[in-house]
Length: 332
Image 1 (spheres, one colour):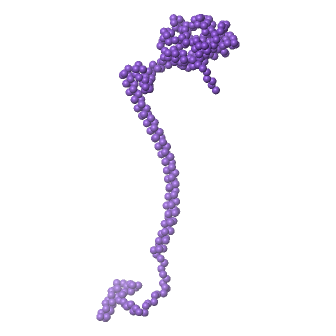
Image 2: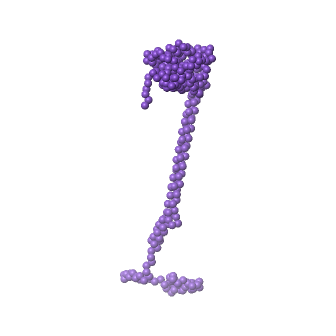
Image 3: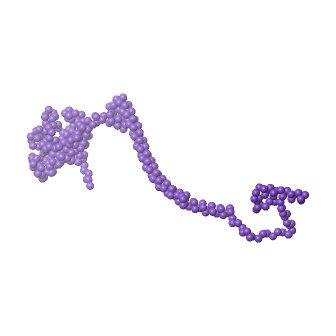
């Protein structure tokens, strides 16, 4: 579990460690853990503008140079920085406060000197000065740490490649339009951003164009998702239709195939209808109905031709007709 600690105090506060007189140490003695009654006081200074991971890594190295150390960090004021190095993004109060909240810092010295003097080192009881080994030319000197190195009080640290305050500022300058448009969109005024009237209108128009592009992009993505869903569903429907079609064809063949149930049912119904339409004939030897005695027998028409014996030839047919006519004359 991480324990919370208070921010590092400033050097002029009463909560700082007592700066009692102590003997001068060599680097070898300090690395061996001598003395054991007090920590080794290590000093690191800088501008620390836009405090970043490179700063924190350098302070970590300074803190861990010796087994038992107390890290003092000097931060130069705005006046000295603007005079010798240039304009800063963060003011001195912001830079002081940023250092106080670094976990490796034990004490912050405000308005630190640009060049370290013996009086300053004695005042703060500094044993060693930690900084990267690259010669730092400034204030008319080729290396402001030269006399510290000659006194055997300099301990080198390693710079972190790829990250620095100058790199961050370069990114901001390179992408100035992007950041100006972003801050305008977040409610900052053109006056606060030092943007001209024409540029303000241009940036706002570009923001509107970007919004439209984003909307179009969202619509395209949603359309792609919809098409993908439709394709997946259509694929599932096709598979289900194939399965159902096989089942349907099989059922159709069972019902209407050559030996299907429908053919058997049709044959059965056809046979029933034939039986109903053509019943069985009555037997020939069935008794005739008795005639009623009150009725006279129906006359017999002898002149009707015999239906069961048709004439065998045309001559016979004419003879029969002539005989029928003669019979009629006799009756008259």
